[in-house]
Length: 342
Image: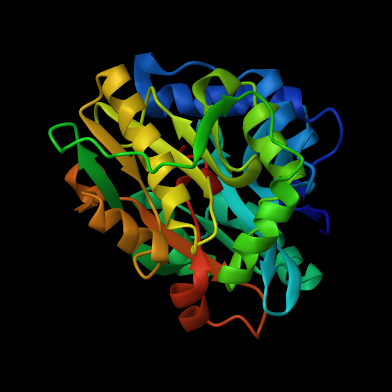
C-alpha cells in the first residue's frame, strides 16, 4: 500500500507500529458520538486482539495528520478461507471512521473514500478473495458509489421462540462444555470443508484466536459433541445477547452435514441454554441455500427479516476474476461468527 500525501495536513499510509494509541482516540471519539451514552470505550487489549494478534495478519489504511491524529481509518480483519482455487484471504471490513473535524458530504469524495481507495487497490494487487461487511446506510451509499460495494443479500435471521417445544437430544452423542478448542478440530474441519465450496477456514488456530483469546471470551460458550469419544461437532454459543432483542445466539458451527444426530444434540443444548437464560429467542444465521438453514427450519427456527429490528446488509467487493457474484451468492457459507456481529 503506497503512501499518499493528501494536502499540507494529511498523509494516507498503512498502519505503522505505535499508531494504535491515536487510532483508539479517534475510534472512541467517533463511536461515543454515534452510539450515545451506552457506548463503552474500546480498550487497547481489544485492539491488540483484533489486529496485532490476528494470526492471519492485519490491514489498515490511515489518514494521519501532522500531529499524529488519525483523521480517518479504513480497516479489515484478515481471515484465511478455502475456495475451489485453493487458500485465499477474506477481509472483514470493520472499524472504518472519520474524525469529526475532517468530515465532508457526498458532493466530492470524502476522506473516508480517499482512505479506502488505497486499501481496495492493495487488496486487488495482493489477490485477496473479497472484502465484505455489514455497513450502515450512509457507509453503504458511499461505498456503492466510490468503493465498488455490491449488495449480496439482506440478512434474514433464523429465530426459534421460547414458546416452541423443547428439542430431544439423540442417544449416543455426548455434549460437553469445554474451555479450549480441541486438537481434533483440524480433522473435523477437514470433513466440514469437504461439504462446502467457499468458507472461512475454521481450523484450531482461527477458532482459538476468535473465541478463546478474545478479550470478550466470557461472552462465549464452547460446546463439543462426541460419539464414542470422537469429536463430531463444535458449537459456539453466545447465551447472553443477540442481534434480536432478548436473544441467545448460535455464533459458530462446525458439524459435517451427514451427522444430523450431532446437529440435533447441539441444537438441543442450545435450546436448553436459551431456557436456562430465560431468553425469548434463540437466533443464528446461515446462508439461505445451505443444509444448515434447511435443517434448522425443520427444527422450529423461523426465517425472520433483520429489518424487523435493524436491517443488516451483507455487501462484498470481489478482488479476483475467477470469483463471480453468482458463485459467492450461491456458494459462500458463513455464520454470524465470521463478523463482529456476534
